[in-house]
Image (cartoon, rainbow, N blue to C red):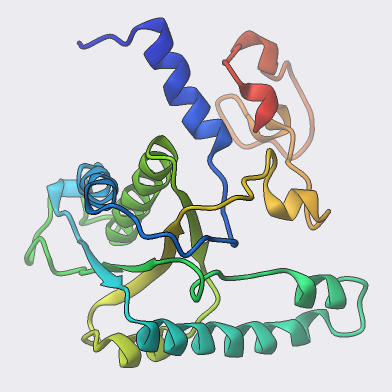
Length: 235
């Protein structure tokens, strides 16, 4: 087993706890080497049955980015109806949801459920493991982007049919995520939704059960102090 030095170990946890979902970007170009490193990290994510169901569509043309941004804004307006008449309505509309027009590159990460053929080892019982594998690739992108000094934002407001149409994606391919990536001069210490009081981070102790699901607080819960991690007060 290859062991990390203490400095390397701390670097891993620093990236995990400090990476952020960013919405504000500079138009400064990304060096090809850095972008390639981020994609290499994604491609080395674990995948069930080693099926590697991902593809990456790099969107750099302004015309294409404008079409994607329009699709995202349309869905954001539609979702605002759910908060109509509540104290969250204006807060939601004021939130900056996407930085597609600012970021030099937006990556559409797709999932091909048939990339492993008719039978994929370990996928018979849980077919959704193809999406889980793609999510692992996206998380690797996030950590690699942080390591490269880049910011990344996961855009989740869009109709998949719109994205398929804009990017000529076949119907059987799932456009899982739109990822905006670039440099930023605003990298917050806390998640943006936490800063805007949209939600608070839940206490880990309340999310850990022993042996079976618990419907009430019974027994001794594991305390976070039992697992001291570097930088954990910053996440």
